[in-house]
Length: 508
Image 1: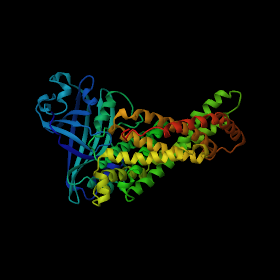
Image 2 (image 1 turned 135 degrees about the vertical axis):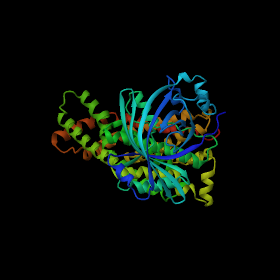
Image 3 (image 1 turned 120 degrees about the vertical axis):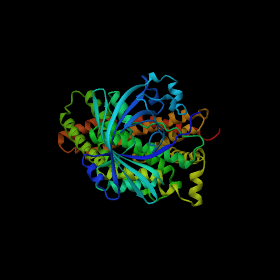
Image 4 (image 1 turned 180 degrees about the vertical axis):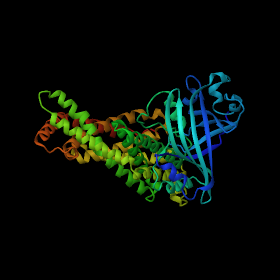
């Protein structure tokens, strides 16, 4: 049985080109500043078995000393990581020092099986800072990761809690961020190094499964799930900063919707305090991304298939206008994710999730909800969400487009919450069938919503004013509407099927 790991709690931020000098001179960081050159070699097996288990093994040269460190990821969005550290004398990994760690069961006893994967070289400037009663190490790293002949620059700041409460990390980060280009990041140097070694680019990140412990409290579940949503959002925002990639934009919106669905389900525990600012800012950012996503969907699901089916028509003017509008919409989206406002949102959200007032509230209602088993909380939340969807779903035949849109939003909400908590319940209760019918209903409602958006929002978003453009758009929308009656019938069938599905979180 591996020894329980010592843990480190740290907050990582990526830095812009001009951020470093300002942060180095920031008032409140206690001198003297220490400057060191650190060279770290990361090792793994040929098949990268350590990486597959969420482990990272490195040997770091720090002056004349050599330190071996094994780190264990805390999961998507985790701020605290397991860490085993030993001073060694050889430039090869010391397996004896890993005997009581998770790596022992992965590696066996053959140290020759380990080989270098990538090298990290940084100049590290560190200072200690007191934030209230807490002690925090501020480390600014500038350097590069190398794997073979490939290189990637590093420019980041890590705040590591040495003593005190994690809320101090966020208070200090907010102070340092004032006027500095810094963005919250959940990606470790190890993850970046493996990607460089594999010669792959950073791909849009879909929702990663979060392994809830069966004995987790409702508060612990919220913290882990919410940070995993935030990690997904930050990763995709970072991609969108650099490139106008539709999948990154889509996954960023998904991450924010998942986070909003989770916080809505947890509203009785979270209250209406700090979370209101996070909710408002998430709505702002979603609004900045809406036009780009609407245009992506219209082009992929309506314009391209319609122009292929109606080849005799001239859609050149419409195509040019859609491309112009799409370019402008992505410029708006990229400006939003590059803005200080967006960076402040991620930091504010992380601080609220990790150390907000809800984590310390001692009033009986909040404390009772926070400390109850996550499965009990999940059952109550899902009961409420299911009741709302069934009430609206049973009136589907009389719902207009706006009513169907509201039903779709509620369907998304219960889907995300059900997926979050599904691992806490036995598959034998019909968990898979419930989620399958829920996804089918959501997909059918989504098809109807795409038609409604093409009718109502798209003309303004795409600037469809010129006669030739307007005529072409009308032809495309008309082509897309041809199956609306059939889609309405199919959606009604799927809504009715879901409404009759028993809840998997309740014993039959």
